[in-house]
Length: 454
Image (tube, rainbow, N blue to C red; front, side):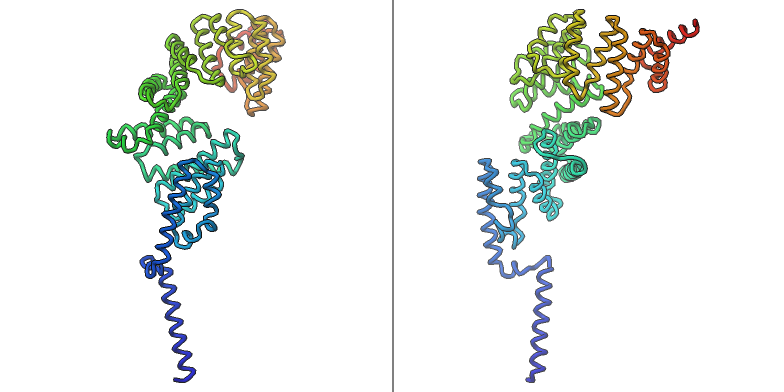
């Protein structure tokens, strides 16, 4: 055989080999690992060993050890990566990273898992939950998320929680979690309510056997029921909220997924909104007896308002005084001032509000407006006008909108101070934007009548 013929034969052999290689590498039915499985079998044994080790670390909550042992996966378990067996390990590593608040790294791992297996419910749910957790961590100032990054993270959470809902439409947890995302992160309770209701309805639709099999979702069913009650109350459906809360309390009687303080406070709040003040008092008194930490001051604040509504300001003040003055937050001091006003102790009420507004850089307008009303009640109309104007300026600077309640009280202070021109200017502005504001027509009629007599 000539040299040329030998070269041609070798070229054909190489060409045939290349074709076989390309076919085997790109064929979904047969790979070299299938043809010669010894390497893949060894990798499978490694996977079994590594996953057992990972599970043990997870049970012991050794999150730092997990991250150190298995990340980056490409370096710590190259044999799994080589044979495409690293996906489950990445999901477990992401679980540990989430517990360490290393959310960006966890999301990176889970995004790869989802890319490889887009219809895997656990991967979709885990990615949505990790994004969700990062947003709550940011809200608690444990990590920093702002602006575009925060918006993108919310989109990621919604997208993958939604995909998990599609994959398991009879589930509970992912509907509950997206509801919490809308409610507590985006403050969109109207969007949260249907998700909480869906979570509850899904649980209710399960048979007793199915509920036992999916017992891990019961906790989120109870929490969804609790959130349903709160969201219904926010939307004005107090009777439905009461029904949901009365169902939630006995269901959680043995498990206590939610503290007694929160459940009975919620029950008291619903009764308060329905003007069932005696029932509200009883629920809140019980909540106050099972208080477990000093941050439960909200129980005493609402209980104080309830006693005030029952016509017992002295008892209301006793309740308010259970929290040391240095720990009374702004909203607490507003109620304290209201109680003191009911007792005709305007000087002390004024002092409370002055202290409150000096320390409050978020809702100072509420204390200032109360000061305006006290000044008006005590005949100090110039001071009333000043405090109302301060409330209006603060609100506009802080929130970018006109504070029309402050406009009315500034107009009223101007009227009583004899500055009818200023009063008419402010009252006319209020009429243009809020024509049905209480007693505005009365003020305008007085101003017009006095103007016509001149």
